[in-house]
Image (cartoon, rainbow, N blue to C red; front, side, top):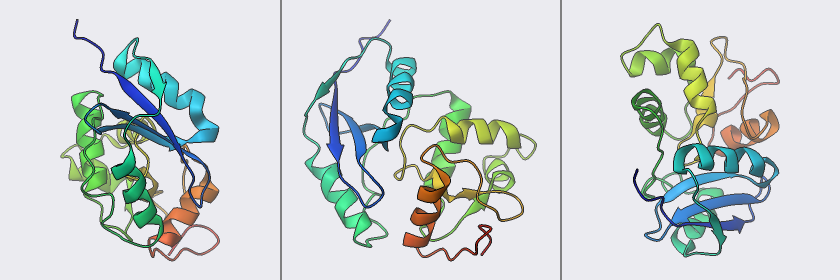
Length: 177
């Protein structure tokens, strides 16, 4: 069994609430989640990293700076951050496809399934989307329902709507554009 990495937990304020950033000693992001979902984030970290403890602190300056730039309107601020997603090969394919969705655009679960060459795996894509531990950087908030409505988001639908509007995606009251 491989050695578990030393992981650092930092707390960052944002316009959508306090966020948790988990990085390793090299500054690679392993998780980015909302503080009100800390138990979920810790469960995902245990699943992916076994017994790794999360130590408070660490060097998250570049991540903090990228988040500040993102929330200030820089559409590309999060692109250069290194991530370690873990997960199965299928999940990693979904998460890579999520990172390919341009800022200000959305995709349906069906479109995401087609993008990874698995057009009939819509439900599995939804499950992989829900298991994403790296919010914003792996932008699972950019996935909407087939009919254009907002669908489940681990950070809550209000946050999802706020993030999409922040990125320039205009939505009506039902989530449709």
